[in-house]
Length: 119
Image (cartoon, rainbow, N blue to C red; front, side):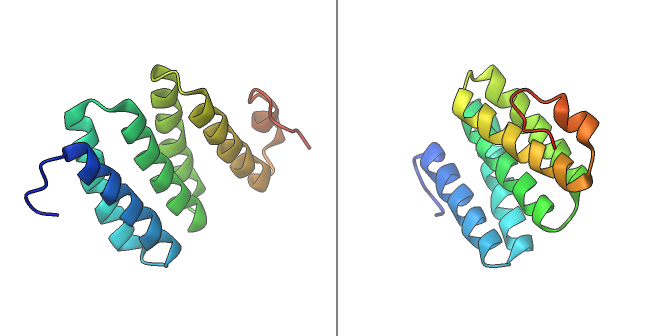
């Protein structure tokens, strides 16, 4: 991908490679791809791209049982989704956040999340 003249395309490719690496169990490699993609999206000012990468990173940490770290990434992604007015991403992220709180048995926090299914 060296010399790629389309930075957004490069960042999208790196994000996809991060997802594939995570699914394949290559989590360190996934984080490397995500970090590279995140840097490019930040330079471009692409809120949706940053949101997608952070969502992938959160999903990775949730899969490792690192729920607090996952929640930090999800909340950052949620703020970006809201700034971008991306209701689809916002809804997905809220679902993921709700799932973590449900798994933790934190029903008080779960019930404070809009449209969450308490209990």
